[in-house]
Amino acid sequence: MLSLLADILFDFPEEYVQEATGIIDGMKQAGVNLFADFLNREIGPYDILACNTMADITSFACSSISAWGDATASDSTLGGETALCRNLDWARGDNDVLSKNAIVIGYQPSNPNKRRLAIITVPGFIGCLSCMSESGVAAELNQSDDNGATFPDINFSFHFMPINFTMRKAMEDLDFDGDGIHTINDIYEAVKSSTRLGRQIIMAVQPNDGRSDVPGFVIENDNKGTALRYGGETTPYADNILAATNHFRVLAPPVDCWRFEAITQFVLAHNEKLTLDNMWEIMDQVKFDFTIQTIRLIPATKSIEVAFTFGDYLSPQKKPISVPWDELFSGAPESDDDTTIKDDDLADDDNADNDDSMQTDDDSAAFNDDEVIDGGESEGCGC
Image (cartoon, rainbow, N blue to C red):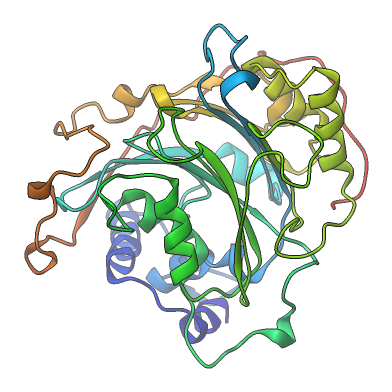
């Protein structure tokens, strides 16, 4: 039923249809039993694609924070560079199935018009939930709960693009907006120009290297519109700190959220100075018992750190494990890491190969269950 609904509502780019087909083919070759009792049939590529519409047709909670410049200048690792930290709050599933199978995927494109991309995800979810490109552009998705366009407001006269596919395309294309350089503006232009079904909040960041006006902003979007929220906007702290939970703050009047307020109070209590450690601490303060991933990204160095919920300990209570970019792509052909697009990089689309190969690092999700940070669980509504 879900795959049929997704096929009716959504347009899936052919390259992602091919990738979903490849996943199913690989499972078959590995001898996996594809029969699903609840469907009374074998799963197929469109079931994979349907799962990638979950952020468009369901709701879940997430929290995130990013900072740069004076806000991170005191951190010995950052020294003013950009950092992003986020909780992915989603259903844990029976026996922590989502957390136990969390993966980091390194996409090595064969298409010359695309760039390397890392995605922190779960098997089968090939869109961008938390991701970072080779040029250090990073993004993560939160859903907006109840202060955007409602279901009756939605225009169903056309098919929609799943938001996570829109984000992925903007991240892996060499230059979505055609301005000659890969920046967070590519993500905004991709979202703004796509047909959108759900209500989402996207935090997008990049290195603090002056490649665009600001190294970070929040994109708020629903079926009716898109808006940018900048650091310091609608918050009492500096313009080099961004926070996001699950409510619009520019596209619609903000509503109370205990997690957003907790982040605000933490930032103010620390005199608007953030470090890698206290950003992780913030994620611990705003966690739920269904927080399944905590992720920390440093765009300038393409640093990826992750922790996943297992058993009694939630992800922000654990010490993060590093997933080195070079190891993620070990064995893959070298590619140009320059953020500026050269004329000869922009091959004619008619001559471009649309087939992308996928390389996964099977060890990237492993970590020591004993590495736990002290801290209790927070309580409150899922605002």
